Image (tube, rainbow, N blue to C red):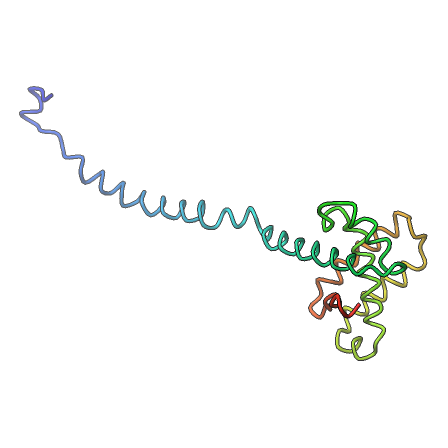
Length: 165
């Protein structure tokens, strides 16, 4: 409601201030929404989706190995795999040990060794260190977990196909 003072000196329009505030706030809000909706979830989740997909592939691989069970070679792995629902999570250590042994076999071929020099050197070093340790010791478990570092090398080999086992 206007007063008598407003008749002699009318108040300034608020429209220019509102437009200036909107011009500043809208781009800031757009950047915030872009990061909050687009970038932030991917930063929080990281590679969780890819990691989960890899675990599912490892589940399938382990179950396929145990479907074609070769007793002395696969016994310790399949003992765990056949007992749990998600072997890639529950049988991680036996799978890493089993994989290390398979990669040691693959790297014993000179052509394969030359093609994946860093990976095979890493695998053979871990395998030789593991041979010197007591099988169920804490140091042996830690040494088997070191194999994960080998798999992250650029020239890392893939596990053998099921039919090639």
